[in-house]
Length: 410
Image 1 (tube, rainbow, N blue to C red):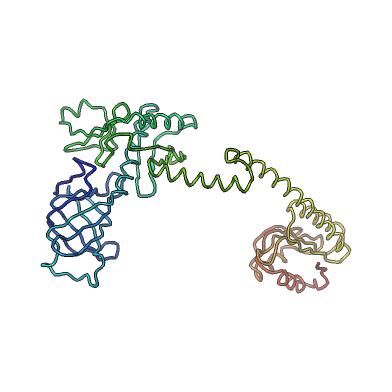
Image 2 (image 1 turned 180 degrees about the vertical axis):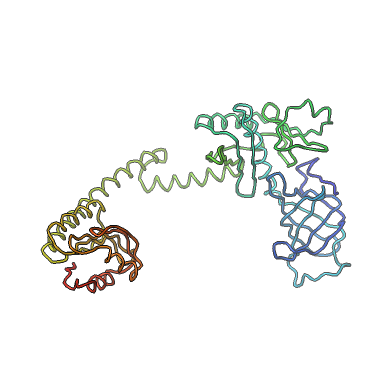
C-alpha cells in the first residue's frame, strides 16, 4: 500500500518518492516498466475515470519514463511506463531507479477535475429534482458520459443545465469528508455500490453529496461552463454527454466556426443560419421536384422513340422510380416484347424495372443475377432491383438472352 497524495490534495502536481519495486511486464503485447512507489500523486483508473499520465525522472541517472497508465490493486497504485529516448532499454537490477521525481500531466488532470466535478453537480441535481440515479459514468480524455435510470424532456434538460451553471457562478467550496461509521449513518449520500472501510465523501453544498475517490476542484467556479451536449435514450433510461470548462469552450468554438462557415455559404447573418438552412432545404426540394419532372419528360420521350420496337429498353441517368414503373407499364401495353428501364451510370450501377406480357421475366432476373451479380426480385410479368455493371455489359446480356437479339436499346 502506498500513500496516495491525491486524496488529501488534488492540486499536488509532482512527487519525489522512493521506488518500492520496479519490474518489466507484458502489457497489451508490449514490454513496459511497472513501478510501485512509496507515495504517489498519480490517480489510477477507477470509478469510471481513466488514470493520470505524466513522466518519471530517475534521480540517480538521466533516464526519463513516460507514464501512460496507472491502476490500483489491493489499495496499491501501480504505474506503467516506457523508457524514453534510450538506444537500449536493457537495464540491470542495479541500474533500476531507486528514487524518482514524478510529474503528472496537469492539463489533462485539471480537465478531468473540471468534468468530474461537473458530473457531480449534474447527477446531484438530477437526483434532487427527478429522483433518478446515476447508474453509469465514464470519463476519458475525450468524453464524459452519465447514465440515468430515467428520461428527460427538453425542458428538463434546460432546467438541469441552468441549475448546475448557477452552482458554478456561486463559486461554492467543495468539501472532502472522511466520516466515522457513526457519522456516515447520518449522511444522505449517493453511491452506486455498497462500500466498506473508510468512505470518502465529496460534498457540493446544496447540490450533491456523494461517495467518490477521484480528484475534484476546490471551488465550483473552477469548473467553468457546464454544457449538456446530448441526452439520448439508452437501455430504458438516458445516456447524457456533458462538457465542462475547457472542453465546453472548445466545443463552443468548434460549433461557432461551423455556424460561421454555413452563414457565409448561405449569405445570411450567423443568427439566421437555421432559417437560412430551412430555406435552402425548401429550394432544394423544389429543384429536385423540377428535375424529376424534367427527367420524367425525357423518359417519356425516350419511351416514345422505342415503343414501336419489338423489345424497347431504355438507359437513363436519373428518373423517379414511380415514374419509371408507370412508363414501363405503359410500354408493355403497347409492345409484345420485353420492356425495361435502367436508371443510373456505369460508375454507380443501375436500378432497373423490366416487364413483359410474353417473356418470363424471372428467367431474365436469373441471368442478371448469375452473370452480372444483380440483386432483385419479382414475378414472371415484372422484375426490379439493382445491377453493379456497365451499360455495355447489360446490353450484351440482353442481346444474348433467349432469342432477344432484336432488342432495341437507346
